Length: 509
Image (cartoon, helix red, strand yellow):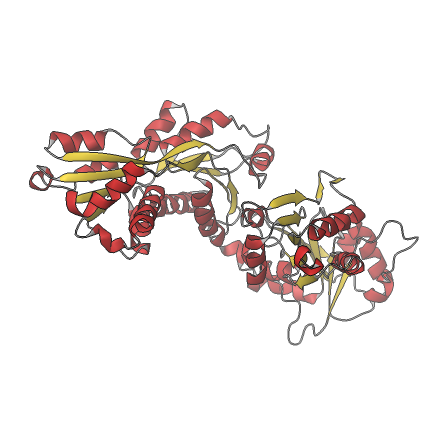
C-alpha cells in the first residue's frame, strides 16, 4: 500500500462567527465525515454535535483563561492524526485565514507533507456588524473598510498596526480581539486624526441570542467609558448610525430571552433551531435519551403480521413513530407491507413523522394525550378490533386498559427505553448554573423527573426561569415534584408550547 493511501488529510474549516446556521455546507459535510475534530472555544457548541458520532473530538481552545494546547502542540496533533490515516477537521472560529493562524497550521502541514484543504468561513468582521444592523459600506457614507486585530503576538517588541495612520483613513474600521485594549486603541486613532464624535459600536457575542451592542463616540471609548469585554467586534465609523433603522435582530420576538430545553438531544436541536430563528438564546440541556430496544425474532414476526392481524396502529411519540416505521421498512423493504392497517397518532409532532414517510394519519385527537386518543374511537370501532400499540417502556397504561375494557385486543410493542442524559458536550449546564435562564420548557413527564435529578440551581443573582408545560400530564408531574408551572400550552404540542412561550413573553412588562 502506498504512503498516499495510508496518509490522511486535514481540513482547515472556518466555523463562522457563532450562529451555527452560518457554517458552510462544505464545513458541515466534512464534520459528518471526519475521524478527528480539533475545535476552538469560539466555535458554536452545536457544531460539535454535528460531527461523526465515532469521531475523536479534541478541544484545543482557551477556557477560563487557560490554553488547552499551545499552537505548536495543535500543529503536532494535526500532523500526527493525519499521518495515522485520519480525516482531520480543524474547526476554527470565523475564517481560518483571517487572524485565525490557519496560515501557520497550513505551513506546518505542508512542511510535514500532509495534504490539506482550506474551507473558508463567514468571518465575524462581516457577520457580527450585519447582525447588529450595521452595514460596513453604504452609498454616500463609507466606500472602504479596514479590518485590524487588537491582539497580536505577545512576544513581539511592538505592535505592527500603525493605529495613528489608521486614524487618518476614511471609511469604516473593524477591530477584532480588541476589547481589552479599546481605550488605548481609541486614543491612538484620535492621535492620528480620527474625530472625537466618530460613532463606535462594541458588539459582544455577535450573531448569538445573547448578543449585546453598546454605542458611543470615540472620545467616550478613549476615556474608558465603554465596558468592553471579549469576545467583541468593534466597529468605528459613520455607518454605526444606521443601526437606528437597520437593527433587525433586536426586533425578533424572543430576542434577549434565554430558554432551556429539556427534550432529548435530537428533539431539542430541532426545537432549538426554531427558537433561535425567533431570536432566543437557547440552552439545550437534554434530560433523557432514547435507547432503542433490541429488534429480534418476536418483533420481525409482529411486523409481518401487521397487515393481516391488526386494524389500527397507535403511535404516541415522534421517537416511537420514527423507530416503528424504520423497523417496518428495514424488515419488509416496502411500507406498502402495512396494507390497509390504519394509523393513529398522539399529537401533530408524531403525525408529522408519519407523514414524512408518505403515510396518512387517520386519527389525531384534539387534545394531545393518550386518554384523548382512546376517545377518538367509537365503541363499534373498538369492540372486537385488534390494536398494535407501539411506544416507549414508560407508556401510560390507561390507553391499553381503556381499549381492552371496550372489547379490543391490544398487543403492545415496546420500541425504546428512556435513560437519564449524562453528557453535556455543549457546556449548557455550566452556562445555566452561571447565568440562569428566563424560561424552561418541559414536553414530557420523564423530562421533568430527570431534570429534578440533575439538581441544577443557578448561582445567587442569576436569572431564575419560569416553567412552561406542554400538557396536563407533564404539569401534574412537575407539580408533584414541587416545581411551580407558570403556564400550560393550550394546544398540547410543540407548536402549542412555542405559542404559549410567545404569548407570555409578549405579556411581560
